Length: 165
Image 1 (cartoon, rainbow, N blue to C red):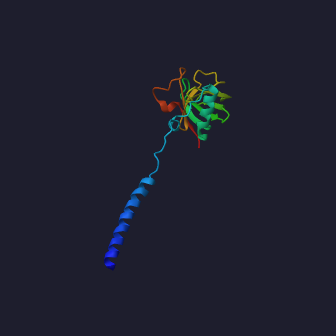
Image 2: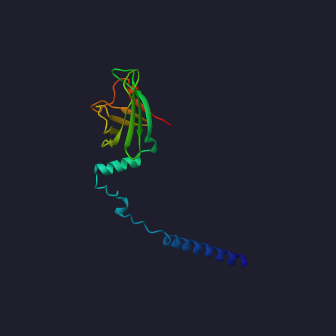
Image 3: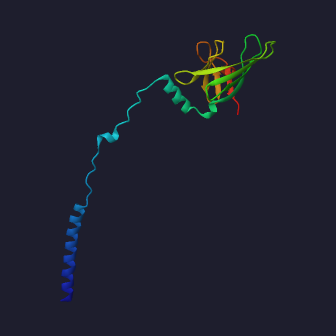
């Protein structure tokens, strides 16, 4: 008799436990998440696109290594080259020294301010009288551009000033 009472009690517990488990499972399902469309919208684009804001953005993106001293020997029509030292300051000013190698010309030292191109890749030395006063700003180097602002087509390495460590 004890065995049949035990069997009936165990069966009852299993049936009740299974029934409670189903109701419990149905009751504990999490509600489906509500997705708001605003969560996936991109932020509005800035409304100001002035040259000043572009310069400020460009200056913020420039590595500090861009400013410094650059040296090289640039080509010269009537001498063996122009030993050029260009110091590019963080406040967009410069000092440039040109020594004409193999010539009787005295070294030329001038200074002034730098103006950035709209795309932020070219600087122009504003106080320079020469037609070639623009440089492409590269990775630790400046490349002298021609009078039209184009990069040299041949012997490009001859037109580069390399940043000193």
